[in-house]
Image (cartoon, helix red, strand yellow):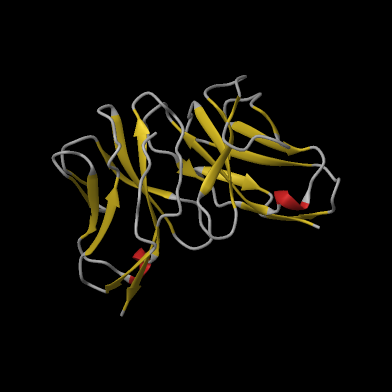
Length: 110
Length: 112
């Protein structure tokens, strides 16, 4: 699986959009980008994934650059409950396992 | 649906003792996984299973054994616990390859 690079931590004001970047410059054509998050002391939670098109669901939007070397997870209106560690993971199609890095600690403040 | 449940939630062991962690899922998922998470680290895959009766090694399998005798259950065993196995253990399940993984609440294990 391709390696990902994320900032260690980020801050966001409540109600504002949180934009979490992820670099995956060695991604190959059949690798998907997944995002999970882990709220303190809980198990990780799936957020969204994509291959090359932008994706949106009820939780977030995923923007993948045209060259697929980076992506951004967008939480449109962050709340205090969005405070968590966010993991960007690249996974090859057909593989069942995930490789977690250290992720980005997002702190949403009032 | 309860989703993914883990038993026990907490456990303290002495070095050399054995124990089994139980993971159960009620979503009829084929795939199940065991991860460990050490302080300040991401999750690391221990073992996984792609169906009843099958198991495979992950990134950090040493010191652990697993069994998947029933589709809904995935057991993680520590035969002779060591302090290095102090960690939080998470179980997960997924419908198949490429599908999202659903995680349990975790088991906090301390080995003295």
